[in-house]
Image (cartoon, rainbow, N blue to C red):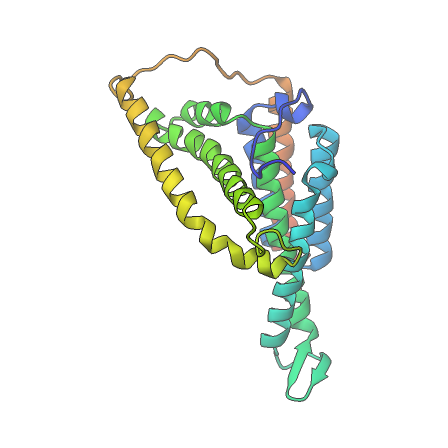
Length: 266
């Protein structure tokens, strides 16, 4: 599996889309999953995002299938925690073991929260996999944010995949040196091995940050207020159409939840 939140090159509709209307699409999905509460609505949103990535981004779910599998224990864990802790008066225990019970309301709430988190993570991944860090920084600068702050977004999108690759390299190095926890098929033992890799990862990240800061200083970063760029962003018809669809979706979701009172758990 490729690094999470790393740009995946291509010439699809999502790849050619300007980052600004693409960000509106992200906001539309966030509005949907944050306003609605029913697990069925969350599951539908999750499936729609997977379909959008596949149909309009030409990125198969098999390319990030491991991430989809990682969402399963997250959803189950949140559902169990909520089922054990949420016991309103009208709730019914679906499973009881002595004084401990799993309430139906808690399970539904937990499943909704887990699917909501999974959908949000997948949506942000859709944005980062189809948008270069350079375009993100340029788009943020285009909407009026000073360049030095817009560059932080560019640097962050580049830095996170680098950290993940460094962590994988450290884990592989420990595995070939006979670390049984790293090479274990038991996910709990592999999770237990992660803290020991954080120290070299932090040292390497600090070194890379220092080198980047020196490179920016040597190139006169921040010395000029006005900057020119080799590449530029311009909105096209598909960008305006996508932005319009996103705004309509946000308005429809708000109307359905606030006015029609759809999508609640009650």
